[in-house]
Amino acid sequence: MTERLDGPAAPPAKIAGGPSAGPAETPRTRRRLGPSPAVAIAFLLPAALLLGVWVVYPIVYSIFRSLFDASGSGFVGLGNYATIFSDQGMLVTIRNNLIWVVVAPIVVTTIGLIFAVLTERIKWATAFKLIVFMPMAVSLMAAGVIFRLVYEESPDKGLANAVLTTVHDTFSSSKGYPEARPRGGDDSPVTEQNGAVVTKEPAQAGRPVLIPIVGVKPQTMPSNAQPARAPSGDGLAGTVWFDFTQGGGGQSGAVDPTEKGLPGITVEAVQNGKVAGTATTADDGTFRFDGLPAGSYVVRLPESNFQASYGGLTWLGQTLITPAIIGAFVWVWAGFAMVLIAAGLAAIPRDALEAARIDGATEWQVFRRITVPLLSPVLLVVFVTMIINTLKVFDLVYIIAPASVQPQSNVVALEMWRVSFGGGNNQGLGSALAVFLLILVLPFMIMNIRRFRREDT
Image (cartoon, rainbow, N blue to C red; front, side, top):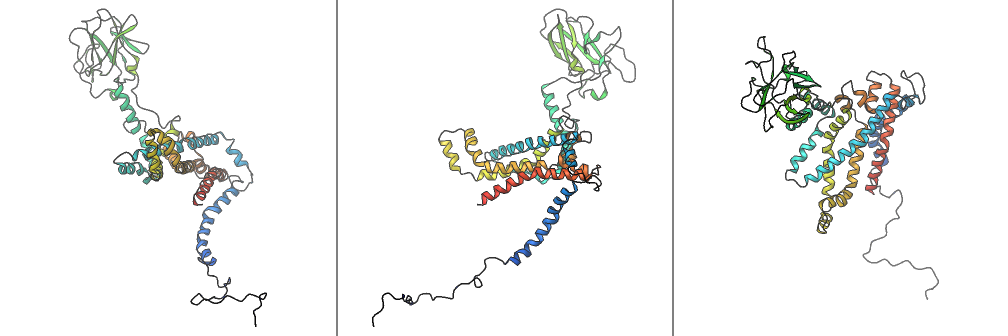
């Protein structure tokens, strides 16, 4: 018999040693990758319950509670939200938050970038990073206590003003004697004129100029003050001293052995309305003008001698309280920014940097055109994280700002607590502030989440 050419094709012959055809794969026999849905739900359910209890329920309840009055019994609709944007104190709070959002993240990111770049060029980079990062180990409340002491107005207590006064006194030798005044009376050789002390009669070389001063407080008397003495030698010279003998006695207008000179006072020799020479009193109150032409001069103690000595800045006053608290925030978070940026800096290909240097680019050009663009994803992470942290700032403002200036330094998070639990007892308005703060934070959180998803794909 011959095989039909138009018939059905015969099944292929089984190759010896080849794999045998198994049974057809069905959904029932297909093996599952990963755990079953029941196991996944069992593991996710506790976390979902906690998320609902700690996050979802508070958000929903805060939105609901913000629609009622302080007692929770009267429905006010959007009245609490209208109060946020109409009350003057609330507007100051929102303004302060805008200052925080604009200033603090930029400063923290910039300082972190500078520190990260510098640590690549110093030998003790590890120690430097440890010192800068150390504030992160301190709670914000403890940092607030630290900076409350740093910003004390008295230079004897506050570090900030101690540094400022030290720098100022380095370049200014004048000492302040507030409330000091010349000895009065017709027999006094000096008088007060527009806040300055001037001699009544013109002075000449060879005739000592005596300038008695009273009203010097014990706390303003310098520790280096020595017993006053009359000047010696030729030239125009004199003595400025505290004309007061403790316990009584002594002669008015005369230098007594128990009376002290006033050091550090600026003395001017004036002729025809112009200052011809300047001198400074020594520890015993004596002064001398060198190189003055012969003639008569009016000796004058300028008004600046009788002003209070420089004591620094009022950091905790209404003007500087917000910048002062931002400074504490930068101190805490600069180390965090430095570590993240340093990690991104270590991942930059060195070939690109070296190629730019070989092509003749300066270090600034390398930094600006290569380093910063390659670090932009990390810088964005740090910047957005700092924005979220500034919107939630609470501890530093509450601890550092005195009660008298807290209205000028208030922020939304602190106002939310103060209105709800800090004496206001208006949880309706406090809930509205909480929802308002959530609305401010949400865009930045969504931005971070989208960026993370883009990086994972």
